[in-house]
Length: 567
Image (cartoon, rainbow, N blue to C red; front, side, top):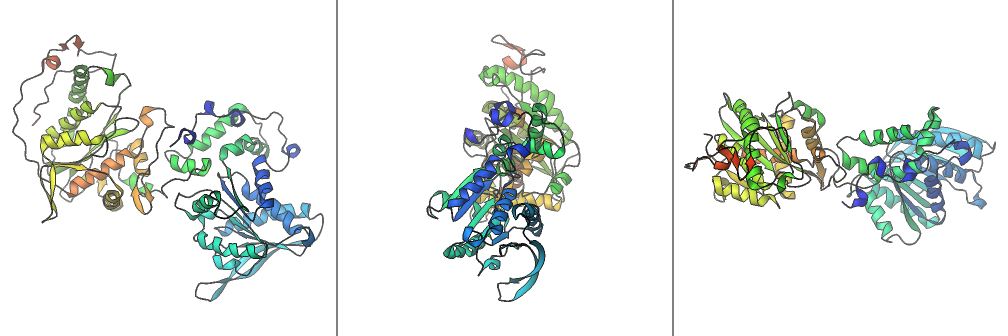
């Protein structure tokens, strides 16, 4: 994602967005904001006008105004019929409501009539049904009619066609095809919408018009939420509510709108910043996620600062060994008490910007996956990730592990496979033999097969996870991309707090855990003899490095453990 696409902090926004107009009077500055006027002006010389817009930027309101002028105008002055098509009946009512308010003013006392009438909706099999439609008749002889979104509705009609929220229409491609025929007799097409994914026909229309595939009499305008804010949206909201517009109030209003999207940053960029996302809706309903998080359980989360990786390997190992002894070992002991059966462990690797997440799950007799605790590491050197992962695997019994071997994770997974033995697919049996370590290369085909199987655990209520907001965000980040549930390729550069830098990491680790659970290879312990406790860990000092208890540096724990053998 380019820098121009990241969400800026309030203080980084342009002055035009942050400033508040003093003594703002919407009656004095005009009914329309600058971007609304620009949208109307661009239509004058175009047969096909397209607007990719942010939510609630006033485009439908502006179109209702200009359409009212068009329908109220005599034929020799450019008047015409207007056919409005939205994805829902309620939007048709709203549009006609705007027209009804504008008509008495624009028509200057001429007779106008608001009607409900029966429209014959032609079905694909040639039959028809009667549906309720709405229209406003003008003394000019023209009318504005709100139709349903069926493509057949505009066959044989003539005039201006409005297609509102085109990306939400069930068959927008055919609607556009049907509307195109109106151009033959001088008709015009106006299309506006927020985006709904890169693969949506509306986005393809935008791309085609920008590429010149519709000729010179077609054009696109892009209007973002920030454009509307810069043009006085906040001040107009305050005027409607009868409250004063203040700089502090504007900041709270603006940040509140963006914060309302929570972890759905892709949705926020799409709906406010007009950046179509790869995915199309969450793949795991929130109610399933909430059901899978019945209680608070340990989330062992470490966020290393940028100075930690620069320390010596010995000092990093001392600190990490202390953390394992004081934090990880108690969690593992508690999780293993009275536990029987086997374990499945998944790990999504990350070195910078995102979290490495390790998900250990107990597989019960009825094949439920119970995750008693979670490990999350941010900005952790690969050696320390190895140290923690191996401490976990050394402690557990009868486990199978699947790790992300894509890109930078390949080295750690290779070393882990060398240490414990890697699984090999037996082509004759279709099962895995060998060691318990699966080195998984993540890809679209892999997600297509295994993320669905992970999601099935939530649907069937066969998984429990720690109750944690960040972990919930990770699972809500899984979306359908061309029908495949996966985490869209969306970088989170707008997140400045390291603890908030997430990219669906916990969900990916969970899917890897499910892969391990369904491809179990019995872990045969490798014969091992410790060479003894390392001097620089055991004696508390090594080369001037202290492992004593401290409240400074990277932690408040002390070292002194040989993790050569937990079992």
